[in-house]
Image (tube, rainbow, N blue to C red; front, side, top):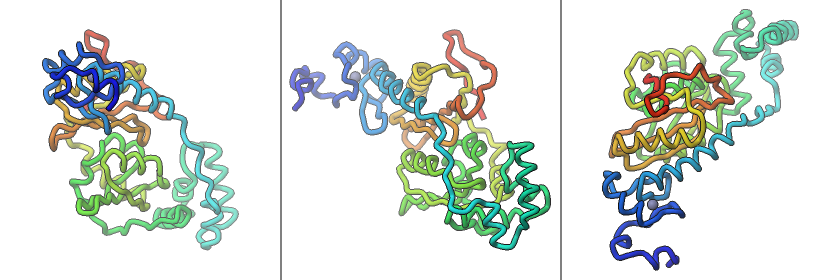
Amino acid sequence: MSWRSFFRSPCEAAAPPCGDMDCSSTRRLWRRFRWRHGTIRLHDSLYCAPSCFEAAARQRFAQLCVATIPAAPMRHRVPLGLLMISREQLTNQQLRSALEAQRGNGRQRLGEWLERLGYATERQVTAALAQQWACPVLASKTICDPNCLRLLPYHMLENSRILPVQFVPSTRMFHLAFSDGIDYSALYAIGQMLDCRTQACLATRSAVGQALQLIGHERRPRELLFEGWRDAAEMARITCGYVLKLGAEAVRMVGCAGFIWARLSTGPDVANLLFPRSAETPLTADLGRDSSGVPLPITG
Ligand SMILES: [Zn+2]
């Protein structure tokens, strides 16, 4: 038994312990007026009052902000161009031309240049990428489960060209397809967020684009994008505000696919708050703020 629990009053002792080390009994008294469910869970810890939760959320957001430096690109044993030459799908001259074109306009990937110049088909590029990443290619006739498309925030899928293919509840295995190479950090974050295992494959850019288009027009009132956030304290304040507004019971937050993503659960209902990472997604001009200076979301 810790000294904190030893000195708790009988009234306080009835409540579960708070994860905030600076938690005071004054906050505990306020908790019953503010918290609809008594406590809120942030990952594996419970918090007794909004201020306790917000302090913990601020710490987590600060850690996620620091972790925005993109990981060094994975070094493959064989570069894509050489791999395609070895598969006799490309000549040395074609590779040189595509690399020159890419140097002139580095925004597109080599595979896209090979397609654009008519040197390779989309399927050939995807098959070579799959060999490079040692993973399977999604069969062209695969029909994605529309429900699992909605398990992840749309802005994130669109930003990183991720296609949720199937979620198997009995094994909690989530199959996801990527079109530009596997983002292992995103897979890990999704696994943490949804408490599931993940398995990746590669799909053509057009297959991913078509599937995302199917849900692109849908209204997503529970997906909130905040482009004008300033710091961890503001993200924590916004998240705490939505926890109170929605009566959320549990919150998880991770860095994933260009965003800091907070997932608020209220029973079976889920709300996703997305904060674009400044290092990876350029912020647009400061968007609307309410009277207290808190950014207003752009609802998808
Ligand atoms: Zn507390």
